[in-house]
Length: 402
Ligand SMILES: *Cc1c(COP(=O)(O)O)cnc(C)c1O
Image 1: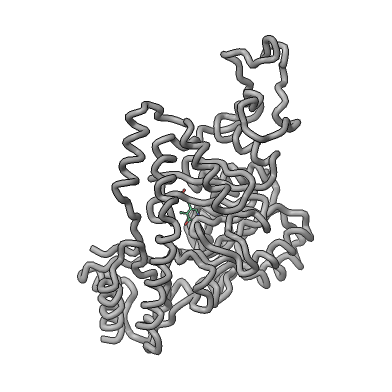
Image 2 (image 1 turned 135 degrees about the horizontal axis):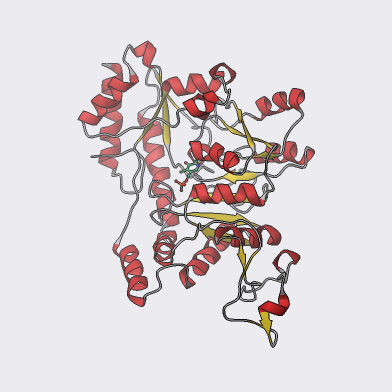
């Protein structure tokens, strides 16, 4: 079976997990800090905070950005439900942008038009769809004019770069960037996520929120100065002889248990060493597909204009199913019969029953609707061979043009 996406594990990955299991530290330990430092180094951000999932990361990022009841936050209609759900978790009001038909990312023109009538913006969560970076310069400009925070949902974009230079995650254009470490994403820890930021106050808040809102004064954190937010409320109880009492901790705000474990961190640390070959192989596969689908009637390759900056999390086609006279469900089943897995990214979030009940209407997202009608994601992952790429493209062309 050739799935649409798949993780890649080698013996080094397995060895590094087993080593941690043998040493006996099962929950948060030294590997977490090592992983966080590696992510900061890789992306170019000052700080990184590992969490239990990308969704947990988005939730904490929304809280740390000050999103709360009454806040209007915009994301894209073409994303996984988690991008919008995180706004609701924090008590905010999600709003959706229609997409740009070429990039499939949120349309900044749509956002500007919406804002002309509502004039309400308390945050933006751009999603780098399939790994292609959004127009962050423009998004930043809009956010700045409302003094609104920006949280990048970079679940698809580990390893991607901005056209202006720099790696996604460096937070040059945002307050925080959130990555997912789910097996289908760029590098994996099983379940997991990581948030990057350049803001020390946000960094410290994220550390507390990840572990029940508990603060121990953070005397143990390397290379950070004492920020107001980490001052202990009851120093007389906390300290003996200038040192933290062994039992002492303060719950200073309402947090969660969103910690990543040490053995998960060991896995993703080992995966990180392969980030460059992972990306390079995806680019090779995309280049092959681009050529194989060139000039095929009724099939349009999406995001082809920029194969340089994208992390190519997904390879997305638009197929005019109406024109070829075959239902997408049938095409997907026919491909499945040939052991080829495909997927649709995404059912637009405002179309979901839960969001429809909140009042969102399909008609407000015509470009997303048109893309959704034709979308098909086809297999792309590190372990996919050249022969499999040719096989997949041939079968798709055969079935679609049959
Ligand atoms: C995968 C994904 C998430 C959630 O990540 P998890 O680690 O699965 O919680 C969020 N946003 C987008 C766009 C995703 O694809």
